Image (cartoon, rainbow, N blue to C red):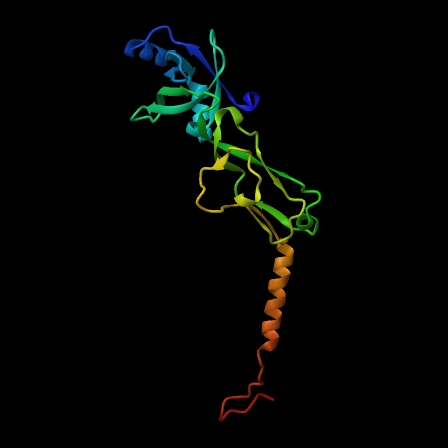
Length: 223
């Protein structure tokens, strides 16, 4: 939903061309352009430090943003290009594309686990191991789910939860759809696993025959 999508705050750029872009960088901004969606392109500036922080969090190119620009209605956008300084690898220009509600987009959706209090495996002392806390999904821009839900209420120790075990929102499909990848599993307690290994080691030792060794031939044992 729109209120769940992170905001990306920008300001309109008065001029266009290399001169205006250079001035924006001197002012601590990153120049950019917003295009598509049946509207005219708009030149914008983004705060350099805030943009850099978002870039360092990762997956900027696959994150849907709610663009807030003075004098314009909020619009959903996704990044379609970032130009960087060839030496410093810092952003120097950004391209944002407007999305209609009917547009499809690849975006990471967080995974939410419910039913942990009723989970037989966890109640027996098992531990939940999360393999993926988010999944990249192909969804409609107008129907982006807040999260994917995994119900643990019937999960036993040793059970593995695959993407096929999750009820996906209508119209949403995993970007990786050629294999049934793992989301999480419930593992046995480490202490129990260690005890089993120790018991196995003791049995092995008991099964090894022992013989009483005497002194080498020709030598008498010490009295």
